[in-house]
Image (cartoon, rainbow, N blue to C red; front, top):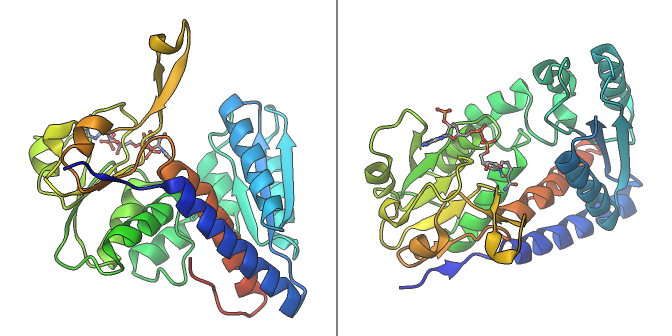
Length: 300
Ligand code: NDP
């Protein structure tokens, strides 16, 4: 059996169309235009690309979009003052602090300063607590696991009752919120990590296998139960000498060809979870704007 390839790009485009429509309807009805502020400190090249993409996508959705680019030697006080300013700005409904921060700046303090009602990355303790308490409707859910759930729902539907899910990775950004979302959808969830014994045997129990590890191709065919749905969150840049000297390519945490021969559906890397992350950031921003305007929160 060859697994169905879950097309994250097409799904992301569909979410972005719905987000654009929801933003336009909100603007027409209330005069409120969704506003997203992205803050980048320093010159990390990957972060610059991500920030530019977020700004472009927000504009394409018809949002009010601002990007604050601060030098690497920005003080914590200056950065916190900017966050305070954005918290108080009624034209801004979502604030995203691009991570990692340069040395000397404390990401927990900076992210913790974001108003939880503008925390469209879902990283504040308030939003993590809401999600962990089962109050997902009130929470902003981190964008990557939220995007994984959209892809999973498309393949398996809303209710995952009776399904065994294994999430490999326990970060606050991906693994833990992913496990919470699967639990809320009634899956029976196990979280694995670097200290887990016999990872392949555990993974082979999974009807839903989510890899959020950051180790290229770590999960091989022997980790996949026949017919499982595999969601590969990993994004790893590896050398690709076949493309020429010094060239690289992106691969996931799952050995795609081996897994695709056994699974029923699988996300590719690139083109799987990656495009969903930015789409869900826009979804959270329009949801925040609706909430601020007293309108019902749209679902994507
Ligand atoms: P972290 O480094 O924060 O977490 C990695 C997790 O993997 C940890 O819990 C770690 O365990 C676990 N781990 C590491 N090695 C092993 C191993 N050999 N066996 C089992 N578990 C292991 O990474 P993130 O969660 O931030 O990201 C994970 C991956 O997802 C990365 O490749 C990242 O680039 C990608 N990513 C992709 C996004 C997208 O948009 N598609 C967005 C965000 C991330 P322990 O806790 O014990 O150390």
